[in-house]
Image (cartoon, rainbow, N blue to C red):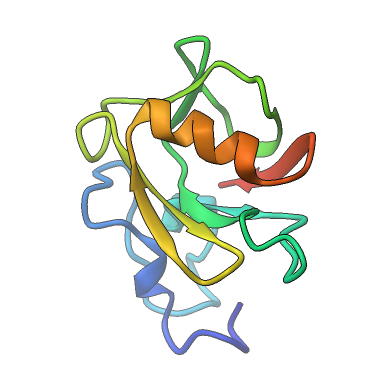
Length: 122
């Protein structure tokens, strides 16, 4: 990431009270300084795939944990109340960003064009 971003400060959502801001990509940079997931398989030829977004998901009402999340298109996914009042932001592979409710998040998941989305969560 250090080759693409000038500062790690943009990797913490201002609404995320659980994360701290890293001053650089060396000392202190890690999962506790990132608020967003990364879409592992996002590609240009699938413009609706999830590239990045808020990491405050729940599956069947249970908040997801750090690591690799395999998110099927029929997953009972929703936003938690932790940030953005049960909403979240998703960056798509086409470069657009969508602010979504839980129901719109599930619609976007179906529109990705793949059966399973792999998301890396901090």
